[in-house]
Image (cartoon, rainbow, N blue to C red; front, side, top):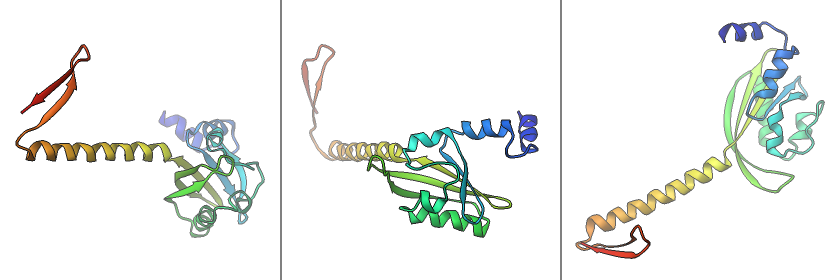
Length: 166
């Protein structure tokens, strides 16, 4: 495995192995180059995001014209030659759906910027539901721990209601 990675690292960016590797990255990934941040590659996972207008040769300023934050971060990554991540909200043009993303900006010498986008929308919904369930549990624990008498209404194995009073 390590020897394969070293071999892959020593090949030019346009090699078949790199292209296959890039296409298989599970996160939607864009590759921009130059001062104009021209899109030179993107992977198959981009389809998950329902972005409109994604095509080779398009400038980042056109692709993200409605999202100044992503565009600003792409240029910051290029000019500062730094890598960073950020969470942001984005309204999908195609569906109108509001999504939450984790975006990672990676600078590669001399002027390549890689953008990874991870959709956190579902994860955030699950976390919110989990927190609501924890809040309900905390409330029930308070009632149980502070009440002199507690009534439980449950169903037995046959579905009959059973009351427990303590």
